[in-house]
Image (cartoon, rainbow, N blue to C red; front, top):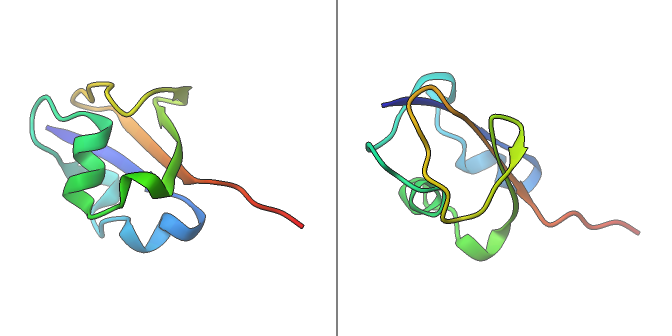
Length: 75
């Protein structure tokens, strides 16, 4: 299946080159996608599918847009 993957801030280095049309395994969860991309699960604090907040166990479907954010810190 083809999805869009967007990694933000410190997760940007994990974003695949073909992020706009990334081939992901059918039935993959958000956590499974993070594993596939080599992103440590404890690094991701906020997850979105199609601009809606989601969980690590949510299943991704063909055509979905996935956004991954690290914890936000400030000073």
